Amino acid sequence: MERYLPWDEVRRRTPPTGLTHKQWWLGLKMARLGMRRDLPLVDSAGVPFTYALPDEVLRGMEALNRDLSGRIGTPEPVANPVTRDRYLISSLIEEAIMSSQLEGAATTYVVAKDMLRSGRKPQTVDELMIRNNYLAMRRIGELRNEPLTPALICEIQHMVTEGTLHNPTAAGRFQLPGEKRVVVADTYGEVLHEPPAAEELPERIQRLCDFANGNSHTTYVPPVIRAVAVHFMLAYDHPFEDGNGRTARALFYWSMLNQGYWLTEFISISRILKNSPARYGRSFLHVEQDENDLTYFVIHQLDVLRRAIDDLNDYLGRKVAETREVQAYLARARKEAFNARQIALLAHAADHPTAEYTVASHAAGHRIVLQTARTDLRELEHRGLLVKVRRGRADAWVPVGDLASRLRTD
Image (tube, rainbow, N blue to C red; front, side):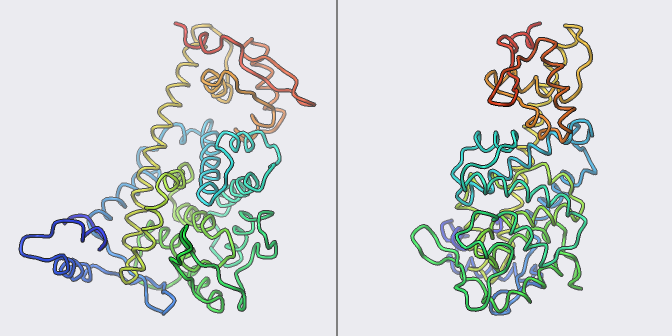
Protein backbone atom coordinates (compact mmCIF):
# COMPACT_ATOMS: atom_id res chain seq x y z
CA MET A 1 0.00 0.00 0.00
CA GLU A 2 1.59 3.27 -1.11
CA ARG A 3 -0.66 5.68 0.80
CA TYR A 4 -0.13 6.30 4.51
CA LEU A 5 -3.67 5.54 5.69
CA PRO A 6 -5.10 5.65 9.23
CA TRP A 7 -6.82 2.66 10.79
CA ASP A 8 -10.35 3.88 10.09
CA GLU A 9 -9.57 3.81 6.35
CA VAL A 10 -7.50 0.62 6.39
CA ARG A 11 -10.33 -1.35 8.01
CA ARG A 12 -12.67 -0.40 5.15
CA ARG A 13 -10.35 -1.81 2.48
CA THR A 14 -9.77 -5.37 1.36
CA PRO A 15 -6.68 -6.77 3.13
CA PRO A 16 -4.00 -8.77 1.32
CA THR A 17 -4.82 -12.44 0.77
CA GLY A 18 -4.44 -14.50 3.93
CA LEU A 19 -4.46 -11.57 6.34
CA THR A 20 -7.13 -10.17 8.61
CA HIS A 21 -7.52 -6.41 8.91
CA LYS A 22 -5.79 -6.44 12.30
CA GLN A 23 -2.86 -8.49 10.98
CA TRP A 24 -2.55 -6.16 8.02
CA TRP A 25 -2.61 -3.13 10.31
CA LEU A 26 0.02 -4.66 12.59
CA GLY A 27 2.31 -5.16 9.59
CA LEU A 28 1.83 -1.55 8.50
CA LYS A 29 2.54 -0.31 12.01
CA MET A 30 5.75 -2.32 12.25
CA ALA A 31 6.96 -0.92 8.92
CA ARG A 32 6.14 2.64 9.99
CA LEU A 33 7.97 2.33 13.29
CA GLY A 34 11.22 2.05 11.38
CA MET A 35 10.55 5.38 9.64
CA ARG A 36 9.47 7.35 12.69
CA ARG A 37 11.37 10.41 13.85
CA ASP A 38 10.75 12.12 17.19
CA LEU A 39 9.93 15.81 17.43
CA PRO A 40 10.90 17.91 20.48
CA LEU A 41 7.17 18.46 21.07
CA VAL A 42 5.13 16.37 23.48
CA ASP A 43 1.51 15.64 24.34
CA SER A 44 -0.18 16.22 27.70
CA ALA A 45 1.42 13.04 29.09
CA GLY A 46 4.92 14.02 27.95
CA VAL A 47 5.00 11.53 25.03
CA PRO A 48 6.76 12.93 21.92
CA PHE A 49 4.98 13.57 18.66
CA THR A 50 6.58 11.79 15.72
CA TYR A 51 6.54 11.95 11.94
CA ALA A 52 7.60 9.72 9.07
CA LEU A 53 8.81 10.44 5.55
CA PRO A 54 7.00 7.96 3.28
CA ASP A 55 7.15 8.50 -0.47
CA GLU A 56 3.97 10.59 -0.63
CA VAL A 57 5.42 13.04 1.91
CA LEU A 58 8.77 13.24 0.11
CA ARG A 59 7.04 13.88 -3.22
CA GLY A 60 4.83 16.54 -1.66
CA MET A 61 7.73 18.34 -0.03
CA GLU A 62 9.77 18.28 -3.24
CA ALA A 63 6.90 19.92 -5.13
CA LEU A 64 6.49 22.61 -2.48
CA ASN A 65 10.23 23.31 -2.42
CA ARG A 66 9.95 23.95 -6.15
CA ASP A 67 6.71 25.94 -6.19
CA LEU A 68 6.78 28.02 -2.99
CA SER A 69 10.44 28.95 -2.59
CA GLY A 70 10.46 31.03 -5.78
CA ARG A 71 13.76 29.55 -6.88
CA ILE A 72 12.28 27.86 -9.94
CA GLY A 73 9.50 29.06 -12.21
CA THR A 74 8.10 31.99 -10.22
CA PRO A 75 4.80 33.14 -11.83
CA GLU A 76 5.46 36.39 -13.69
CA PRO A 77 2.59 38.39 -12.11
CA VAL A 78 3.99 37.87 -8.60
CA ALA A 79 7.64 38.14 -9.67
CA ASN A 80 6.98 41.51 -11.32
CA PRO A 81 7.29 44.27 -8.68
CA VAL A 82 4.84 46.41 -10.67
CA THR A 83 1.97 43.94 -10.25
CA ARG A 84 2.88 41.78 -7.22
CA ASP A 85 1.27 44.01 -4.56
CA ARG A 86 -2.12 43.74 -6.26
CA TYR A 87 -2.01 39.95 -6.14
CA LEU A 88 -0.68 39.98 -2.58
CA ILE A 89 -3.58 42.13 -1.37
CA SER A 90 -6.06 39.81 -3.10
CA SER A 91 -4.47 36.78 -1.42
CA LEU A 92 -4.47 38.38 2.04
CA ILE A 93 -8.14 39.31 1.63
CA GLU A 94 -8.99 35.76 0.54
CA GLU A 95 -7.20 34.15 3.48
CA ALA A 96 -8.63 36.61 6.01
CA ILE A 97 -12.20 35.98 4.89
CA MET A 98 -11.92 32.21 4.53
CA SER A 99 -10.08 31.69 7.82
CA SER A 100 -12.75 33.71 9.63
CA GLN A 101 -15.61 31.91 7.88
CA LEU A 102 -13.99 28.60 8.85
CA GLU A 103 -14.43 29.73 12.47
CA GLY A 104 -18.07 30.76 11.97
CA ALA A 105 -18.05 34.31 10.60
CA ALA A 106 -21.36 34.67 8.74
CA THR A 107 -20.58 37.64 6.48
CA THR A 108 -20.71 36.83 2.76
CA TYR A 109 -17.52 36.84 0.73
CA VAL A 110 -18.66 39.68 -1.54
CA VAL A 111 -19.64 41.96 1.35
CA ALA A 112 -16.45 41.19 3.29
CA LYS A 113 -14.24 41.78 0.27
CA ASP A 114 -15.93 45.11 -0.43
CA MET A 115 -15.40 46.13 3.21
CA LEU A 116 -11.68 45.38 3.10
CA ARG A 117 -11.09 47.00 -0.28
CA SER A 118 -13.13 50.12 0.43
CA GLY A 119 -11.74 50.58 3.92
CA ARG A 120 -15.18 51.03 5.49
CA LYS A 121 -15.59 50.24 9.17
CA PRO A 122 -16.99 46.82 10.14
CA GLN A 123 -20.71 46.88 10.90
CA THR A 124 -20.97 43.53 12.71
CA VAL A 125 -18.85 41.30 14.93
CA ASP A 126 -18.41 38.92 11.97
CA GLU A 127 -17.07 41.74 9.79
CA LEU A 128 -14.79 42.83 12.63
CA MET A 129 -13.44 39.28 12.89
CA ILE A 130 -12.58 39.36 9.18
CA ARG A 131 -10.93 42.77 9.33
CA ASN A 132 -8.93 41.67 12.37
CA ASN A 133 -7.73 38.61 10.50
CA TYR A 134 -6.73 40.71 7.49
CA LEU A 135 -4.65 43.04 9.67
CA ALA A 136 -3.07 40.05 11.41
CA MET A 137 -2.09 38.47 8.08
CA ARG A 138 -0.46 41.73 7.00
CA ARG A 139 1.37 41.81 10.33
CA ILE A 140 2.62 38.25 9.78
CA GLY A 141 4.27 39.43 6.56
CA GLU A 142 6.07 42.17 8.50
CA LEU A 143 7.24 39.69 11.14
CA ARG A 144 8.68 37.09 8.79
CA ASN A 145 12.27 37.77 9.86
CA GLU A 146 11.50 38.00 13.58
CA PRO A 147 11.92 35.03 15.94
CA LEU A 148 8.75 33.50 17.34
CA THR A 149 8.15 34.36 20.99
CA PRO A 150 5.26 33.85 23.42
CA ALA A 151 4.67 37.62 23.27
CA LEU A 152 4.43 37.54 19.46
CA ILE A 153 1.92 34.67 19.59
CA CYS A 154 -0.17 36.69 22.05
CA GLU A 155 0.08 39.74 19.78
CA ILE A 156 -1.33 37.79 16.83
CA GLN A 157 -4.17 36.32 18.93
CA HIS A 158 -4.97 39.80 20.24
CA MET A 159 -5.17 41.10 16.68
CA VAL A 160 -7.53 38.35 15.45
CA THR A 161 -9.87 38.61 18.46
CA GLU A 162 -9.86 42.32 19.35
CA GLY A 163 -13.40 43.56 19.96
CA THR A 164 -15.01 40.17 19.29
CA LEU A 165 -14.73 38.33 22.63
CA HIS A 166 -17.43 37.95 25.28
CA ASN A 167 -14.58 38.30 27.77
CA PRO A 168 -12.40 41.16 26.43
CA THR A 169 -9.70 40.50 29.04
CA ALA A 170 -8.94 37.16 27.31
CA ALA A 171 -7.47 38.92 24.27
CA GLY A 172 -3.70 38.76 24.03
CA ARG A 173 -3.02 36.34 26.88
CA PHE A 174 -2.91 32.62 27.54
CA GLN A 175 -5.53 30.99 29.73
CA LEU A 176 -4.60 31.11 33.41
CA PRO A 177 -4.57 28.45 36.13
CA GLY A 178 -8.02 28.31 37.69
CA GLU A 179 -9.82 29.22 34.47
CA LYS A 180 -11.93 26.56 32.79
CA ARG A 181 -9.94 25.26 29.83
CA VAL A 182 -11.58 25.59 26.43
CA VAL A 183 -12.00 22.13 24.89
CA VAL A 184 -12.56 21.15 21.25
CA ALA A 185 -16.00 19.60 20.77
CA ASP A 186 -18.17 18.55 17.83
CA THR A 187 -21.60 19.97 16.99
CA TYR A 188 -23.20 17.51 19.40
CA GLY A 189 -21.05 18.63 22.33
CA GLU A 190 -18.86 15.53 22.39
CA VAL A 191 -15.34 16.44 23.48
CA LEU A 192 -12.83 15.64 20.73
CA HIS A 193 -9.74 17.14 22.33
CA GLU A 194 -8.93 18.29 25.84
CA PRO A 195 -5.86 20.55 25.84
CA PRO A 196 -3.07 20.51 28.43
CA ALA A 197 -3.57 22.22 31.79
CA ALA A 198 -3.13 25.98 31.87
CA GLU A 199 -0.28 25.57 34.39
CA GLU A 200 1.76 23.88 31.64
CA LEU A 201 1.22 26.53 28.97
CA PRO A 202 4.24 28.81 29.63
CA GLU A 203 6.70 25.90 29.32
CA ARG A 204 4.87 24.33 26.38
CA ILE A 205 4.64 27.57 24.41
CA GLN A 206 8.32 28.33 25.01
CA ARG A 207 9.15 24.83 23.79
CA LEU A 208 7.07 25.49 20.67
CA CYS A 209 8.89 28.78 20.04
CA ASP A 210 12.29 27.12 20.43
CA PHE A 211 11.25 24.49 17.90
CA ALA A 212 9.84 27.06 15.47
CA ASN A 213 13.06 29.08 15.65
CA GLY A 214 15.25 26.00 15.13
CA ASN A 215 16.71 26.22 18.64
CA SER A 216 15.68 22.79 19.90
CA HIS A 217 19.08 21.20 19.11
CA THR A 218 17.49 18.08 17.69
CA THR A 219 17.98 16.23 14.43
CA TYR A 220 17.16 17.98 11.17
CA VAL A 221 13.47 18.71 10.58
CA PRO A 222 12.43 19.61 7.00
CA PRO A 223 11.14 23.22 6.81
CA VAL A 224 7.62 22.32 5.64
CA ILE A 225 7.32 19.70 8.41
CA ARG A 226 8.40 22.37 10.90
CA ALA A 227 5.73 24.81 9.70
CA VAL A 228 3.01 22.14 9.74
CA ALA A 229 4.05 21.05 13.25
CA VAL A 230 3.82 24.66 14.49
CA HIS A 231 0.28 24.85 13.08
CA PHE A 232 -0.67 21.56 14.75
CA MET A 233 0.88 22.27 18.14
CA LEU A 234 -0.68 25.68 18.66
CA ALA A 235 -4.05 24.09 17.93
CA TYR A 236 -3.22 21.14 20.21
CA ASP A 237 -2.13 23.32 23.14
CA HIS A 238 -5.18 25.56 22.57
CA PRO A 239 -3.72 28.23 24.87
CA PHE A 240 -6.36 30.91 24.30
CA GLU A 241 -10.01 31.30 25.22
CA ASP A 242 -10.76 32.00 21.54
CA GLY A 243 -8.92 32.52 18.26
CA ASN A 244 -6.75 29.40 18.49
CA GLY A 245 -7.50 28.18 14.95
CA ARG A 246 -6.91 31.54 13.30
CA THR A 247 -3.72 32.05 15.30
CA ALA A 248 -2.46 28.56 14.43
CA ARG A 249 -2.98 29.14 10.70
CA ALA A 250 -1.34 32.57 10.92
CA LEU A 251 1.70 31.01 12.60
CA PHE A 252 1.91 28.46 9.79
CA TYR A 253 2.27 31.37 7.36
CA TRP A 254 4.88 32.98 9.61
CA SER A 255 6.91 29.75 9.72
CA MET A 256 6.82 29.25 5.95
CA LEU A 257 7.80 32.86 5.28
CA ASN A 258 10.46 32.77 7.99
CA GLN A 259 12.05 29.75 6.30
CA GLY A 260 12.16 31.37 2.87
CA TYR A 261 8.96 30.11 1.23
CA TRP A 262 7.94 33.62 0.23
CA LEU A 263 5.32 32.56 -2.34
CA THR A 264 3.23 31.12 0.51
CA GLU A 265 1.99 34.66 1.07
CA PHE A 266 0.13 34.48 -2.25
CA ILE A 267 -1.94 31.36 -1.50
CA SER A 268 -4.96 30.77 0.73
CA ILE A 269 -4.98 27.51 2.69
CA SER A 270 -8.22 28.40 4.49
CA ARG A 271 -10.12 28.45 1.21
CA ILE A 272 -9.28 24.76 0.77
CA LEU A 273 -9.90 23.95 4.45
CA LYS A 274 -13.30 25.66 4.39
CA ASN A 275 -14.39 23.45 1.49
CA SER A 276 -13.54 20.28 3.49
CA PRO A 277 -13.66 21.16 7.20
CA ALA A 278 -14.39 17.56 8.24
CA ARG A 279 -11.15 16.32 6.65
CA TYR A 280 -9.26 19.08 8.45
CA GLY A 281 -10.75 17.98 11.76
CA ARG A 282 -10.10 14.28 11.13
CA SER A 283 -6.45 14.96 10.33
CA PHE A 284 -6.03 16.26 13.90
CA LEU A 285 -7.88 13.30 15.40
CA HIS A 286 -5.88 10.70 13.45
CA VAL A 287 -2.68 12.02 15.06
CA GLU A 288 -3.96 11.52 18.60
CA GLN A 289 -5.63 8.19 17.77
CA ASP A 290 -2.41 6.69 16.40
CA GLU A 291 0.21 7.32 19.08
CA ASN A 292 0.95 10.97 18.20
CA ASP A 293 1.85 10.20 14.58
CA LEU A 294 1.87 13.66 12.99
CA THR A 295 2.31 12.15 9.52
CA TYR A 296 -1.46 12.17 8.97
CA PHE A 297 -1.67 15.91 9.54
CA VAL A 298 1.42 16.48 7.40
CA ILE A 299 -0.10 14.56 4.48
CA HIS A 300 -3.35 16.49 4.78
CA GLN A 301 -1.56 19.84 4.83
CA LEU A 302 0.65 18.93 1.87
CA ASP A 303 -2.50 18.18 -0.11
CA VAL A 304 -4.05 21.48 1.00
CA LEU A 305 -0.95 23.38 -0.11
CA ARG A 306 -0.87 21.58 -3.45
CA ARG A 307 -4.48 22.49 -4.15
CA ALA A 308 -3.94 26.08 -3.00
CA ILE A 309 -1.00 26.41 -5.41
CA ASP A 310 -3.12 25.02 -8.24
CA ASP A 311 -5.84 27.57 -7.40
CA LEU A 312 -3.28 30.37 -7.45
CA ASN A 313 -1.95 29.29 -10.85
CA ASP A 314 -5.48 29.10 -12.27
CA TYR A 315 -6.29 32.54 -10.87
CA LEU A 316 -3.09 34.07 -12.24
CA GLY A 317 -3.77 32.50 -15.63
CA ARG A 318 -7.21 34.10 -15.78
CA LYS A 319 -5.91 37.48 -14.70
CA VAL A 320 -3.07 37.43 -17.22
CA ALA A 321 -5.57 36.63 -19.99
CA GLU A 322 -7.85 39.48 -18.87
CA THR A 323 -4.94 41.90 -18.78
CA ARG A 324 -3.86 40.92 -22.28
CA GLU A 325 -7.37 41.57 -23.59
CA VAL A 326 -7.31 45.06 -22.13
CA GLN A 327 -3.79 45.72 -23.41
CA ALA A 328 -4.84 44.59 -26.89
CA TYR A 329 -7.74 47.03 -26.85
CA LEU A 330 -5.53 49.88 -25.73
CA ALA A 331 -3.04 49.11 -28.49
CA ARG A 332 -5.83 49.01 -31.12
CA ALA A 333 -7.33 52.24 -29.86
CA ARG A 334 -3.90 53.88 -29.82
CA LYS A 335 -4.58 55.30 -26.41
CA GLU A 336 -1.93 56.98 -24.32
CA ALA A 337 0.03 54.73 -22.01
CA PHE A 338 -1.89 53.20 -19.10
CA ASN A 339 -0.16 52.00 -15.98
CA ALA A 340 -0.50 48.46 -14.61
CA ARG A 341 -2.98 49.54 -11.93
CA GLN A 342 -5.31 51.11 -14.47
CA ILE A 343 -5.11 48.07 -16.73
CA ALA A 344 -6.00 45.83 -13.78
CA LEU A 345 -8.98 48.02 -12.90
CA LEU A 346 -10.27 47.97 -16.49
CA ALA A 347 -9.93 44.18 -16.64
CA HIS A 348 -11.98 43.90 -13.44
CA ALA A 349 -14.55 46.45 -14.60
CA ALA A 350 -15.10 44.58 -17.88
CA ASP A 351 -16.38 41.57 -15.90
CA HIS A 352 -18.10 43.59 -13.16
CA PRO A 353 -20.15 46.29 -14.92
CA THR A 354 -21.88 47.37 -11.67
CA ALA A 355 -18.65 47.72 -9.68
CA GLU A 356 -17.79 51.00 -8.02
CA TYR A 357 -14.26 52.23 -7.41
CA THR A 358 -13.25 54.79 -4.83
CA VAL A 359 -9.97 56.49 -4.09
CA ALA A 360 -9.72 54.50 -0.86
CA SER A 361 -10.46 51.10 -2.43
CA HIS A 362 -8.05 51.68 -5.34
CA ALA A 363 -5.31 52.82 -2.95
CA ALA A 364 -5.82 49.82 -0.65
CA GLY A 365 -5.87 47.36 -3.53
CA HIS A 366 -2.47 48.46 -4.84
CA ARG A 367 -0.69 49.78 -1.74
CA ILE A 368 -0.44 53.31 -3.13
CA VAL A 369 -1.11 56.73 -1.58
CA LEU A 370 -4.51 58.37 -1.99
CA GLN A 371 -3.26 61.05 -4.38
CA THR A 372 -1.87 58.44 -6.79
CA ALA A 373 -5.14 56.51 -6.62
CA ARG A 374 -7.15 59.68 -7.33
CA THR A 375 -4.95 60.46 -10.33
CA ASP A 376 -5.46 56.94 -11.74
CA LEU A 377 -9.25 57.20 -11.52
CA ARG A 378 -9.47 60.72 -12.91
CA GLU A 379 -7.35 59.76 -15.91
CA LEU A 380 -9.68 56.85 -16.70
CA GLU A 381 -12.64 59.21 -16.35
CA HIS A 382 -11.07 61.76 -18.70
CA ARG A 383 -10.45 59.02 -21.27
CA GLY A 384 -14.11 58.07 -21.27
CA LEU A 385 -13.77 54.67 -19.60
CA LEU A 386 -15.17 55.51 -16.15
CA VAL A 387 -17.96 57.83 -15.01
CA LYS A 388 -17.82 59.72 -11.72
CA VAL A 389 -20.84 59.50 -9.41
CA ARG A 390 -21.54 60.97 -5.99
CA ARG A 391 -21.92 58.60 -3.03
CA GLY A 392 -22.77 60.59 0.08
CA ARG A 393 -19.85 62.88 0.72
CA ALA A 394 -17.42 60.94 -1.44
CA ASP A 395 -16.87 60.37 -5.14
CA ALA A 396 -16.97 56.96 -6.78
CA TRP A 397 -16.29 55.84 -10.33
CA VAL A 398 -18.30 53.28 -12.33
CA PRO A 399 -17.57 51.69 -15.73
CA VAL A 400 -19.15 53.25 -18.81
CA GLY A 401 -22.07 51.19 -20.08
CA ASP A 402 -20.31 49.65 -23.08
CA LEU A 403 -16.90 49.11 -21.49
CA ALA A 404 -16.85 45.31 -21.87
CA SER A 405 -17.75 45.37 -25.56
CA ARG A 406 -15.25 48.14 -26.24
CA LEU A 407 -12.43 46.24 -24.56
CA ARG A 408 -13.22 43.02 -26.43
CA THR A 409 -14.01 44.36 -29.88
CA ASP A 410 -11.46 43.49 -32.54
